[in-house]
Length: 133
Image 1 (tube, one colour):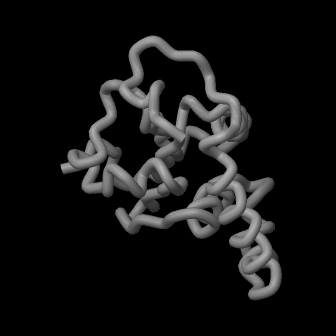
Image 2 (cartoon, helix red, strand yellow):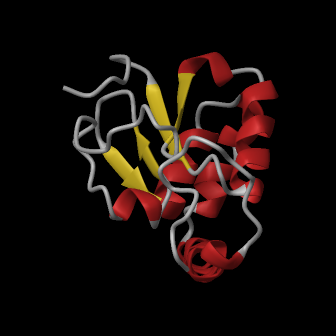
């Protein structure tokens, strides 16, 4: 059984990625963040298997579990996140339009290829500090 709270959105993010962490920190300041459980996948306490997640894929793409327990990856995950915030939920129908979504997916694909080479936070106790690029 996973540790996410029933009926709550769970966002699994890379806490060592500076850009990812800044984005999550921004979301945490927004009205609606209380409906989201933010889970740092680089924490020594995180266990992908216990969360019913692939331990390799979880480090390749953002994963978001919606309130019904369905898993969304990449851009679709961001749509779930955005839908929790009054200010951002209006973006979802527009961003879901085929040409816009394909552009977002292309940008996210490029980001996933570059992310391992971006500066990472320094850390002491994460088992992911020394992942080879």
